[in-house]
Length: 168
Image 1 (cartoon, rainbow, N blue to C red):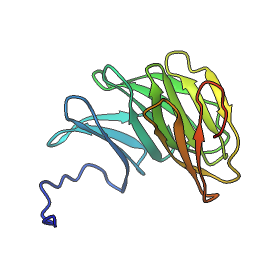
Image 2: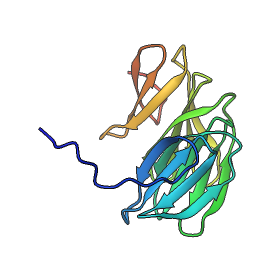
Image 3: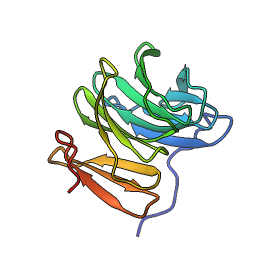
Image 4: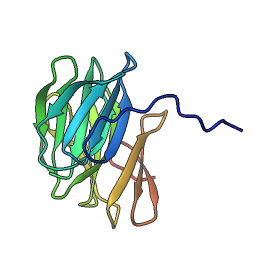
């Protein structure tokens, strides 16, 4: 059994933390209900602001970039070195609840609008829209073979081909 001792506690937001990922250099990136993203190690080093809603999901891209999905319906691509937003992606009708990197240059987003969209992270163009869920999409992950798995409030997990959009 594991000991329940906590290695570190850091207060970094004024209200709840909603998402978390780790950068290649070991720093943590977290999103909050306070509409900000913080990049920190032992203290809040950088605060990224730009969303008008809760940060629901964060995922690591490449070269020090992260994507954030928000209840404001947008996805933002951030340079964690400069703290600048490189791109704002729009296209969902309701809040973005889940993100995962499909491969370099592509990110998948799930939404309360019941869809999953595959986006080009350089241009913001939608590569594919997946529409087989009948309730909110709550989680996404990429599988080893490049397909993605999605979880939904419709009580299903679906496996998708990210090239064809086919649901297995």
